[in-house]
Image: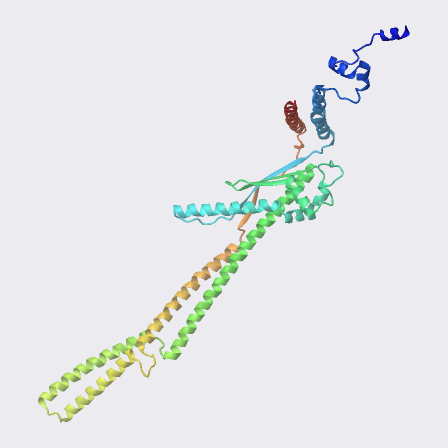
Length: 419
């Protein structure tokens, strides 16, 4: 009886939801299925993909990736970030006034060259402001490291007092900038510091060092011009001396002080001798008609004519032919003399021109060639221009929101692909 009651006791089968009747039949009884549940996985059971970016995950990620960085940035800019003051100045590099050419083309060319040189000098000064020598100068005069490494400066903007020169130069490039207008050549200087006084003092020191650089460039230009003029003058003087030495050697070798005058005198003498020869020839011809060949007067005229002919031949040979293989004719001496005279005249004129240029270079060297004209003087800042606290917080929020949005879209795309 007890066994029958035991068999009729109802058995609950709803403790295993989603289990088919076939599974119960294969197990033999619900109890057997429950006992083997830990050993056998359920067939056909669906699993939902796991993800952190559900509705709650989106809220948490938005808080961590957007609101938290924005709150940190707002706290930093509101309570930690140090004020940055700006001192501005504008200057230009100009040359001394010069006489322009009278022609339009020459004036245009001279104007273009002057503008190119001025702009080049302005770019030199602008690059010098960012250079290592400028940092060394400011470190010596203003103790640059101590200005940017103060304890009052916030840790993010502060310069490490032991920073190497490369890091100091990179830091200085953020605190000072110089831009050049390519058309006007005006240099705009902007210096940042953590106190108005420091910004003003740094601007003044930069202008002073830049003016010294311009003066040094001008001095070097003047020295180069004077040195070049003196070198040219020395070469011209040596050329004049060489021409005079060559002339003296020629006169000693040829015996002609002035071959041109000597040739003129010889030519005149030769003309007189030829005229006399013609007269003697006429007299001799007349005498032979009236006298015999042995007459004393005829013989005298014949002897005089022969002597005169020989004299004329000697003079002509001396002027135009070479004797004993030596080239000592008057025509050759005259050609050499003319070349020497041309060289002497040219060297003397060249020396005169170079002397005038050298004197002009000395005069130009006595006056300033380049000037640094500061038409906007640096002034003491009345308020801090940086950081722009509200704008910077908005920028941080926008960047964080953009990053969060992109990541959310990427995770959603991956989730859709998996399902």
